[in-house]
Length: 101
Image 1 (cartoon, rainbow, N blue to C red):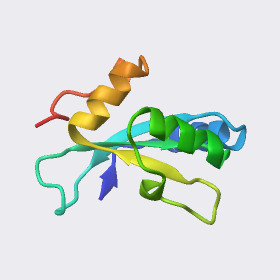
Image 2 (image 1 turned 120 degrees about the vertical axis):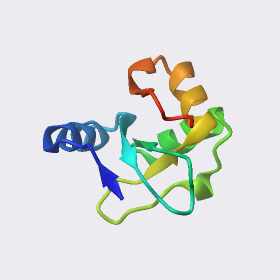
Image 3 (image 1 turned 135 degrees about the vertical axis):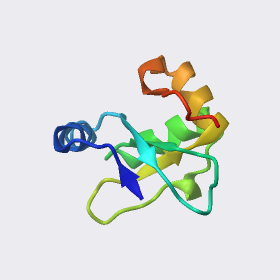
Image 4 (image 1 turned 180 degrees about the horizontal axis):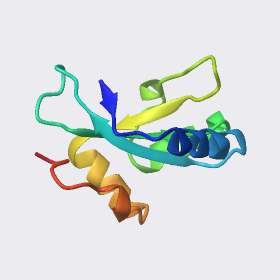
């Protein structure tokens, strides 16, 4: 279950993806499959080769991409990998308190 997103944030994320940029959006998220994790960061790009190359730089496998017909394919980042990747990308503002619990 996702929550804490504003429509403008989603529009901005999609616009960046449509322009071929790497786009990051972080939101609160609860999933019984991943107890203890409270946020997820979605990293998307319309240029699939760029998204794959970016993922490989962070040891993310191409098969982990959520391929979507609507064009908003993305990686989901959670937990320790999420924090490590966001720090490496200079996106500390996406790291929220309680995320790594």
